[in-house]
Image (cartoon, rainbow, N blue to C red):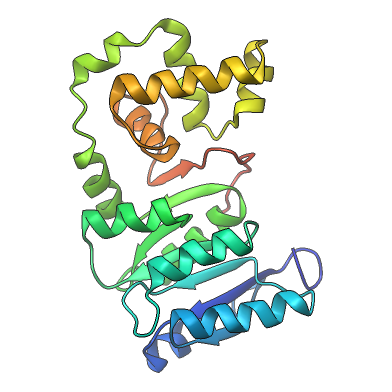
Length: 236
């Protein structure tokens, strides 16, 4: 991380200046947080993040509004993750719609919080993103889980090894980490994941993680380990 090696660098994107000022002001007084830039739409955010990155000072986390002019937050999130994969994005929005939650996560967002959430929830989402976890507002988590309409009996179609792989995916394991844990090749681990997604009719590892939570394979309280990242403890 930038600055003194422990401070989380945050960039705030929202088309309402008052919202940006509120988020920036709260983060500025929080130990271990520093606001390194702001933008009023997705296009402006990309330009300013590009300038910060070129100067060797990219943000660690972007707080991203989803409904904005010029370039919306979902498209901006996808572009950020394409150009700067190490930058994490947390969606911050006034609206809770399952389609919007799903689109933000599929674009690469590492969290989803509502604007009327407690400030501590925003901080938790930022810290979770840095730790390699997906933080979802509880209402967003329920909305997303409700769309995973895989019949409960479908889980019985998984072999014991596949359920073990599904658990490791939900705990944040990459194919390489799963292979190492199970003593198999990375190709075998990748094949297991593909077979599981096909059997459960799921489209992504994030959806598989949510399914594993619903099935009780892992325990979570709104924070889901993000596949492909090493999970570290998140502070209160």
